[in-house]
Amino acid sequence: MSVQSLPTAYYDAFLSDLSKSRKPSPIRGLYPLENIPGMISLLAGKPNAATFPLTSVSIKARSPTDPSAETTTELTGKALAEGLQYGPTAGLPNLIGWIYGLQEREHGRKTGEGWRVSVGSGSQDVLHKAILALVNPGESVLVENPLYAGIMPTFESLNAEFVSVPTDSQGVVSGALRSTLENWPSGKPKPKVLYTVPYGGNPTGVTTVEQRRREVLALAREHNFLILEDDPYYYLYFGQAARPRSYFSLERELPEVGRVIRFDSLSKVLSAGIRVGFVCGPEPILNKIDMHTAVASLQTPSLTQAITYALLSSWGYDNFKAHTLTVSQFYKEKRDVFERYMKKHLNGLAQWNTPEAGMFFWFKLLLKEPSTEGEEEDSEALIRGRALEKGVLALPGTVFLPDGGKTPYVRAAFSLLDEADVEEAIKRLRAVVLEARGA
Image (cartoon, rainbow, N blue to C red; front, top):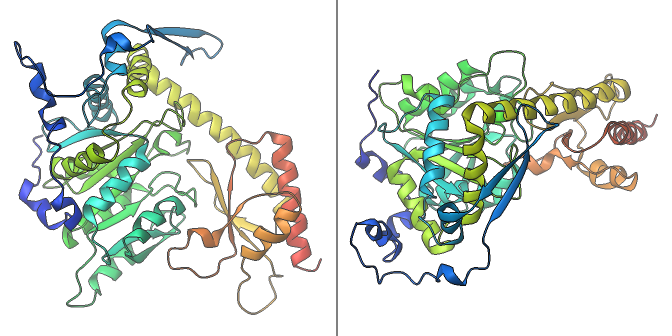
């Protein structure tokens, strides 16, 4: 089936004034010309590779299909030379090519559909740059409520107006989003972007069901906004139901594509410290992201990209998939342990929905007896005060409220602790809640 992409001119109305003022790097924009046969380049101030001390890099990794076995990949010759030198702003060509193949396998998206790839120093890097490329100071933005706290500072630096879209156990409440947009004040520009974490949302742990995603996509087309699909937990899905398709995949069924900008991360499945993530989206927007990178950091480090590509290419797509399934099963077991002790020690003292992806529990503390009337209690003082004093560290839900206010909710990460520490942490929380209830 042929895919119709939105024209380049469509995105002019979405670009921020800052991004419109960006110009291509006068040096980096000419890098591709160095590859013309016979070209003698006097262009770039690249250091001479003869001065680099590294002669090889050996990568040892657990086998994706047999964790007891170890594989070794050597980074030498041309591949190492590429990793030690300045490279293209958007990413090393080999890694970019591997990502195109991955996105076709995972999301059914092919080259030639009006999108391309840029590699960033983690997905947060390219997400930050995308927001600056799209949002002007003071503009309205659609965001999930609760909202990933790590992205708030970027929006706040622009003095953006948060327009909260509620979430429930099924993800984004598309009906509420429709109501907000259909009742938008006349004369006030509608938001240009919706920010969402569709799998294992941070902080809620919720995965948005496919029907809701389809409804949000329809609203994006109807009300003319772009979807920022921040998906670091995509490969950490461990629900019993079939995996919902991504926004990036589902939009292929629409009359035209180009309203989804997708952000992927390798932090949760390869290494958080290697800092490799990538963005897939319309070329006019990614061009602006690359212009930002060119002046901010020149590029994502070539060596980390080369190491990442060497490992992924040695595995192949099937082994990469096998590895991610192992990782998701690991976190499922962590979730099960955490929930077992939640049920044992916080039954009747907290409420929660079981997460089906990611690494977080989002639970409501019942700080009053059910029969007690009045306003719900807030978890802020309890978590920052008595819980901390008793030696348990978690995040109060207020951290994740884009509009501020109070909430009895708490976010707890279950990714690192062993079983004994999980039980002890939850027992301490139990004591804090009982104390707050005067029990």
